[in-house]
Length: 233
Image: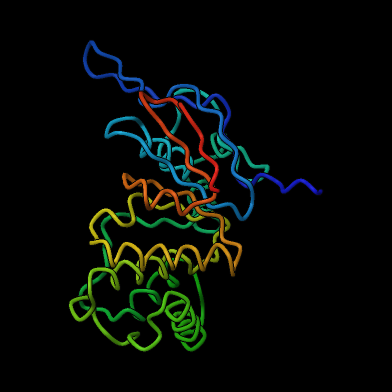
């Protein structure tokens, strides 16, 4: 059987912070590999380093030591502008807070993300925004503003926005953290559809073991280290 290539890999990844006379080790020598098209969840208690790990992987903060590879590119050796370009082209982000523009419709929020990405052509941009909103189940609500959408629908707009550049990797930091049970399951259905139908690689942080169990495998962290990995049955 042919080996699926790793789209994401960390080697000896560490991150420390100096707080006066105290040094805090948020991430401690993590080796991690995620295959293309894999859906991986990360769990652990608050302060265990999981969000720091996600920010290191996304190139939003620099490691103290170690490397992060996106495909064959070691992003720790890139300049700030090169990392920004790589994020724009290859990594999408979904956060616990949606950060939608309240005066723009769902379609407008996605179109704005395309403009930031450097897309040209308003007609093509609108068509693409509508396509992405259909992917997340909001095709009929493209013209509604955030206040006219439920909290779960707002998160789906944020997911559509994260997909505008067709990123190879989608990083999600507690995407259901502000949602009730029903909306949480709706978001997970969107992620599962993206993963199964479109081959989207997803790395997701969550506190919820039921949500984590929907992924292909769950990585458990404690004190900045990986302590266990559970494969989905």
